[in-house]
Image 1 (tube, rainbow, N blue to C red):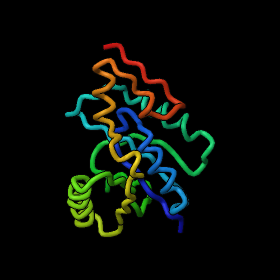
Image 2 (tube, helix red, strand yellow):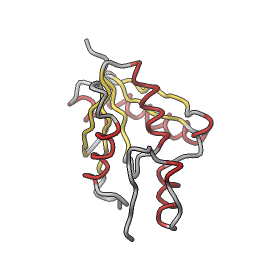
Image 3 (tube, one colour):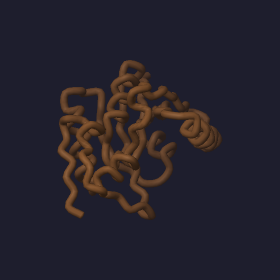
Length: 156
């Protein structure tokens, strides 16, 4: 049986922290699906198509990585893709408490899916999509926080 994981997120935008977690998690699995969750109640800075394009470009040479979007519960998406694992990155104690609650809820919803946490690289623990969005919206340079393969440009 293949070990399949889903790394869920909005990736708005994808950051070097996301890429680090994916690269460090990849040796643990036979296949890793980057799941871009779509929430109709949330306003995104970048269109879904652009986020998919970025991630596909970054991982174009890694055949074990695929990129898909989904709506609804992450555990349901995992079940549809026969994924037994959810991969999550932890940057801080606050992240841990939040992710622990989500993981425990997911465990109640689906006992066959296990969450795997990877601690953020200390040098990347301050990088988050929300901070990068704020930098972009306020005219700062996002280049130190995003993968070199992508060009982040926003016309606000």
